[in-house]
Length: 342
Ligand SMILES: [Zn+2]
Image (cartoon, rainbow, N blue to C red):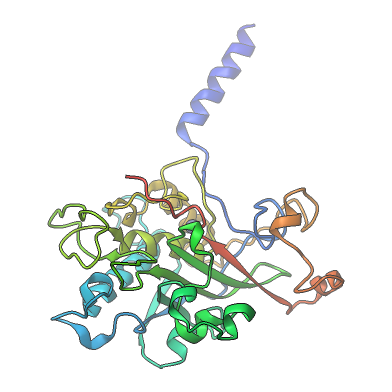
């Protein structure tokens, strides 16, 4: 009895000293975090090289701003916030006073993407990650009868949101990776931005204001208001960058990878302790990324039938999975990062 009690106490102390990590890595079998390979960026150090599209907020709008655009059409402000949000992961510190980050992951902003075509091309494996604001839904931005409305591809042709509007999703990150080992090859993020209409609005009004000085929540739907917080660009981009580096949603601990966001708040701009633990464990300084073979294989669990597919792009092709350079493009999406919870 006494021995048993002592062992139990020791376990409790150990648990208190080293709380279990709650973060979850995205896997090469989307929808099944326990199958395939965990996703990771290669490189020594791994570099997240990214650009910000000017398709929705042109560079030249500031300081007067462009009407009906995110962050008052102020590109420099938008750019500064996006950079800070992406870079937060590379600047992760266990303690704020630590002189250096606890991760070897680095980020490299390559500037605004102004090319008329490249600035709206998401899901293209070009080695450069793109953050782009989509204007409205394709259904209300693309002329009726346009072939892409039924065949797909309108998003990259018209810079509109191609996903179903009914989901209310704020943003979507598409990660391309090698199925043979989980190495990420490309990651692009789309934010579903407002279509500019107050009478028939679709999308979300994103803001850049805050946190200092403190600003209020926008009133009503928030469209075109400035100096207030509606859907915070910083919180959304911080979350989506987590997907870009290979993290999945989690709800077990405070985290920017929580699958829901509260409108009117900038709180999710700041990495939580579990997020810091994730990036610093997966991408330790001076070492390659932590590769991880997960216990299951694609299709081995009941979830895989909807999450993985594992046919490499078509039924009858499962054998292609053994090819080392087969690439599958899957969305790691903020599906539930969607509903407004005020
Ligand atoms: Zn998400």
